[in-house]
Length: 92
Image (cartoon, rainbow, N blue to C red; front, side):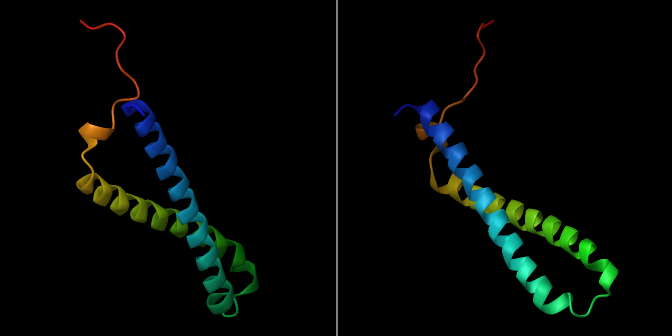
């Protein structure tokens, strides 16, 4: 495989990982919200709780993704395995 395919597969895998982390954190936070907070909250405020759960799950997935990418980039020599996806057509 060449460097562009490696880069494309890395980006695709990282994106899938980010979506999986977001979904798992959303499910986990939703279960916690339903079990712990929903019985204590008034009836009209349940929709706000789900919106907050959604935003917090996105934040959690972003933080986990960022730390994992930093860790992987320290371990992997990026110049050896990855190349730019887009290059200039005309060199000046």
